[in-house]
Image 1 (cartoon, rainbow, N blue to C red):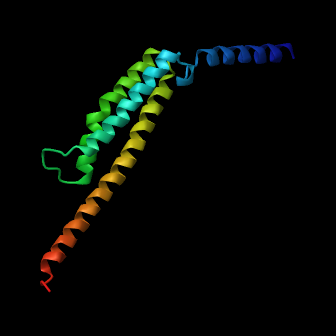
Image 2: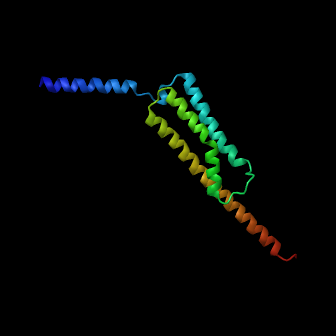
Image 3: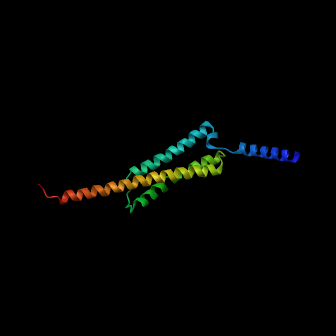
Length: 136
């Protein structure tokens, strides 16, 4: 019985030690938290601005456009990972946070890109129909 209690106490103590060292983004200081949110805002802004500005080179598909935008904004996620890692945030949380941001942005970007391409195709089709109609 004493061995079981000792083992249980040892396990509880080691669990507390692990939990104490487990740093999450919520545990960051106010300054570190502000910097994290600033990086996230910059990432979201990069995604938005990249969608709004016209691409100079010819883009063959919506997927190509989305890939180009995602690659252009990836440096912000790298900065986020560096910042969180430098503040001893649990590495799996850091990777998970970056992956979630990337995934959300990709879904939104692809949806918006495909909707824009569909609208452009529809507008082009309507323009062709208007040119085919005889003047009345």
